[in-house]
Amino acid sequence: MSFLKLALTWIPATALLLGCTSKQSTPSAKISGDEFIATFRQAHDHRDLEAISNLVCWDRVTPELRKLTEDNLRTTFDDKIVNVKLTTEHPPGRPDVYERNGIIYRFNLPVIAELVVENPPLTKDAFNGSYYPLAMKDGRYCIAQMAPVGSEAQKPLASSNSADQATQPSEAGKTGETAQPAVVPAKTVLVVRLGEEVGLKTVKAGGKFSASVAQPVMLDGVIVIPAGSPVQGIVTKEGDYSPDATLISVTMNGTSHKISTGHVTFNEEVVFPAGSLMEFELQFPLELKALERRLSTIFSHISGSM
Image 1 (cartoon, rainbow, N blue to C red):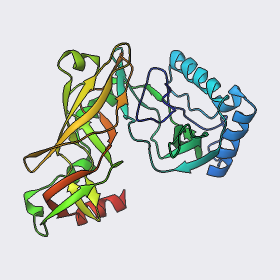
Image 2: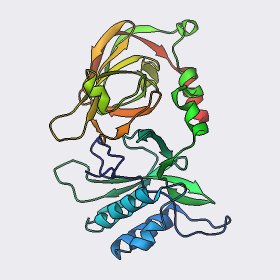
Image 3: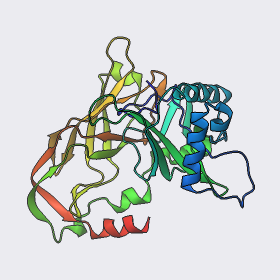
């Protein structure tokens, strides 16, 4: 299964995120989203591997990963394209960092958008297609690649960023709280920060892992699942299939709530270090009875300034 096919799964070893825009140009060169889409579609329709490879940012990408990416690109030429669009909504289930054979990999450019390539649906109302993470380089769109990073880039991995810290619930923020029931709808994305290393060894150690909510979940402008809420997940592996990670509970105000999420599938050689961000999508609504909900004016201000 390819990383480019979104099914709440992720296989870093075979699906190397596509990357940067077309051929090298002067820093003053610009390209619009429509132009990028047109270039992508033309390369696909002409089955032109060189042209579509020129849309990839290969900065720091290893020869092995480049070959795997180009092989994967070649296989997409057989897929009929129904629609291509740009969006700022990122696919759930895609971690921002992983470790393979002792090496940490991250995007080689900051991802700012997604190129969504839609193929004919396999089943009714089910998405069938690919997400390509877009970045900017020299004023041009790029499809960001995963690439090895140095030791200096690995240091901030386990630390929370300022946005996470700013959204932590505090004793000073209790004014305006009301005890009201809330229902978090299915398909809500939970972004969590791993509290420990997760990989194949997790299965052998009992399967369970700890994490915390990295971004608060809001309903009608109110935080219903605060950042920092403890989360428990489990890694399973059936037969010859790749390991699957999923979340099984989230704890708020001392109460544990069972949850069911989509799976993140990963290669057996991949290890997600403690501090990594992962995304999971709720499969069923989560009812939170008598939940202490806090008005999130501070968070709304922060989100608007990001």
